[in-house]
Amino acid sequence: MQSVNDNRSATEEKPVQRSKSPLQSFSFKTQREVCTSCDKTVYPMERLVANNQIFHAICFCCKHCNAKLSLGSYAALSGEFYCKPHFQQLFKSRGNYDEGFGRKQHKELWSGGKESETITKTA
Image (cartoon, rainbow, N blue to C red; front, top):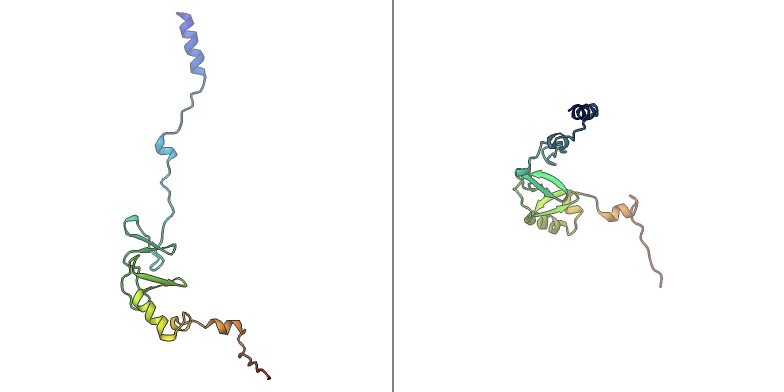
């Protein structure tokens, strides 16, 4: 029986390494998502993603009329969201995406801010 006690003492001397419990190894740390419109926390049940931007469902509104938008009823231009009727109306009012939406025309950017020079042809 002494040999059995000798074996127990040999095993007791070795430190026992236990693996971490599943609760210790699993991390609940997630990145806090913030609404693009109101800068408040967005929880999964109210989360809406449009053009890689996160919104509350109630904060996803038309810039022109503030009507609530859905993923099937919006049009986006330069990070701004519009309902489809107002997007068409603003485009049609000036005939281009720049003036209708309150930005400088691209032709002004091409000329470098100078007045465009007129080229005359001689026959």
